[in-house]
Image (cartoon, rainbow, N blue to C red; front, side, top):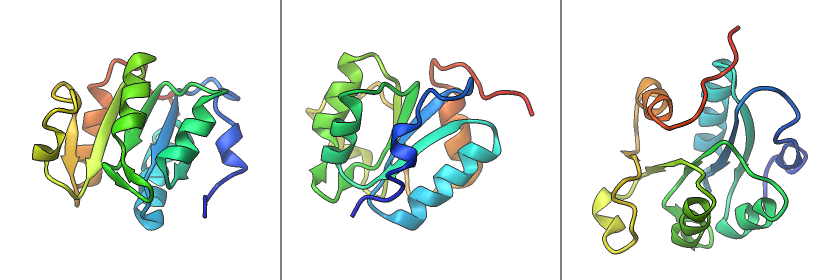
Length: 136
């Protein structure tokens, strides 16, 4: 079941930078969504699978993304490859250790292990090559 389907079509409707959240644990996804919206980002998701995210990406492009490594339909490796090919920066936010990225060509991708403090997530996003949120 995908959550927030109505929100999944809204990227780019405001001047705020848009973040795609792909996270199969809905409460974690909603927490990250709240963090980002609170500081002024537009959010799409949380989507719970790579397939849902890839379907959304067929007609949309976020400014950046936050991906869980292990999703409802497997790892995020195919999704990560698509984002890299489109030059969309992203952060991996996962309960799995970074050692899982061996051979996935994600050495340059920020990897945050769950659980992480809110500020750790925000600081990782601030280091991405993305314009900041709108001033409040």
